[in-house]
Image (cartoon, rainbow, N blue to C red; front, side, top):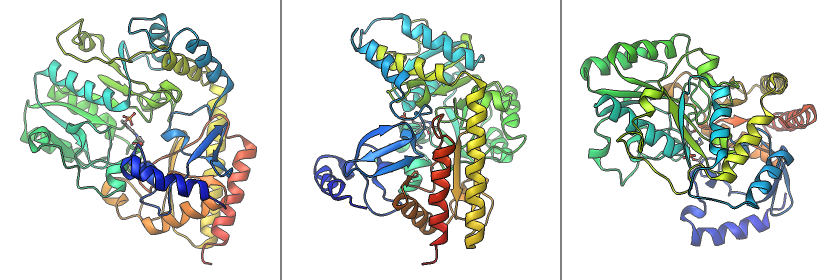
Length: 429
Ligand code: KE4
């Protein structure tokens, strides 16, 4: 596979962008080799600048549930663009997307659009602190909620991928109120509330962890968080930036039938354009300026192109039929990978909830950061590189999720499974 153009572009990029990328996980640091520079995407495929085609299971880290350049989404963006790219003033499109999101997630009574998942979680936590007049927050080890200072504590995703001990530049003072519990371990949460009575404003959780690889909640875990936060007067924030419109049309909150106080969203609701959102109980959202005193703002928040792309995307995933199809295809993938690895004698653990999945190279069932961090990253890197050379583009880290789309159809799944077979048939060579 010739990647000469990517190689020279990456050399040039490293002189212009830190590490040659605009987001760390793209740098392939955990899997070796060097990132491919992309020329275009089309449906389930990515094409790099050297003309190589890959079946894409990263899908821009989740947003592209309709695949690349879906005609309906492209047309919506084109129609919006000719009317102007940003007004800096309210537009009907913001109301349209708000209502569309609420159709899928009725627990969201009021919503504020922002420009990224990071902005969404940062704002939701500020709101929880404003509403409860408390300062401490609880997050879970291995969960990632974006790069706001207060959340860069024992985080997943790129922080875990690069093995960063959190991040320099985050003053100790900023994170002194960020408490860390263990995912799937209610006892670790109870201990914090016992130690800090009436001081904890909120728990923020990825209801299905996706940033240490995909780790489903154990039965009772999310229900327990709901009971504890209600009892303690703390806000329960479901960070559904990744799980929203991915694990179920109504997100994890519908799948597990839990009503969080606040929900954060991103990725899918922008259809590939920059969008985030936070929303939930109206009485809490009424604290957000200018309705209330809690300040949050954004130049491009709710911009017409992103709203249009999000609307078009959600339109394409309204029909239960597309979800049933994605479930069927995802299951075919699970079974295919399982049997190929078993035949080759390679120990793997597979996790999946809806359209987000991970293949762990480990003999231990992954249930939290402690069990995941021991996964064999060398084997994962070998899997990644072999699959890439067989034309399949996976997330370049053991601590990330992979995603399917409505255009990962029978033929694409069959192509993928052929690459899986080839990968494991040559595993020991
Ligand atoms: P952004 O600021 O990257 O839009 O969203 C932050 C965020 C918040 N919450 C969850 C649960 C998330 O998964 C994310 C971002 N996810 C990563 C992938 N694991 C984005 C990819 C990247 O950092 O380049």
